[in-house]
Length: 281
Length: 137
Image (cartoon, rainbow over all chains, first blue to last red; front, side, top):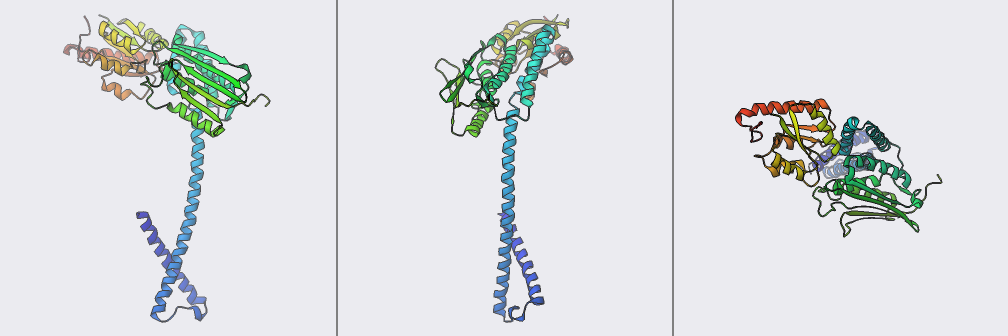
């Protein structure tokens, strides 16, 4: 409201200046016929005409400027959105995981130096991969599994016998394109909210198969589940929100992504996307 | 006359590391190790340690819930050891002696133990304000 009033004042000021300049120019150069009329009534109309004309010009200029500002804002918003996505991709390794791993390496350096060295190599691979800035939106399932396998090996070092992994990957699906880094947040969720909070631990099952023209992948755990889980206060977590947004971004409506709670406990995540092979490149 | 110490952490390697550093201190006697909050509550109630190295995030019952369940009157002095840096303020609200972030080195741990010992000696004549029980038996 205050802004509007300010604009109005500027408008009147601009119009007056505009008028003053015009009157000066008209007096200097225009032929006598269109000069300021001499009677008072005509003078008032003449004045109003110039002021309203000037005000209209001001509004026009303002509108153009506003349009430029608006356009710039849209551009910036899009840029920020891209940055956010990039950031989301980069920071999927939870800092807590990183520090716990470093602490474990510290312990292993005394008790089992060979294992410590192995974990350092695994962690380095993970970091190298997740810090890479020129990552494409999609990679092959084989590459994705390599990353997740290393991540899970480290988690097994941390959780030991409390974490069991079952792989059931159809060899036919290994060259299929999948979203880059989509599996790791899913298994991380399973561990953080399902298995780590459970005293006896649990098992994660990762399954992939090709059905006709679709690729079906599921991640299933027998952890605490969503309903009985009090550590999971943030809904389905950053990981899943990101995954959903990215799938929508990549495949539009041509995908399925479902989270369910099987009757015998835990959480199951099903993802179905179009099957596309990437080995020819 | 030793300081009876309990180690609570759900990562076995983290327990091992704390034990390794503490083993070098002749005044410390490790009386137990726990992998979760439930075990910790039982151990604190039954063993009445003088010092507890407590994890924050653990299966089912976290470190803060352990303190709450045992109750301020019966709670042993606590040094929190965690990978999370955001619970420091909360930790000192429940009278934690220290808040150690993972990963930590030997110096960090021994400094913390030295600080704990000083607090205990300071509190001893008053009947141990921190613990509600005497430091030596």
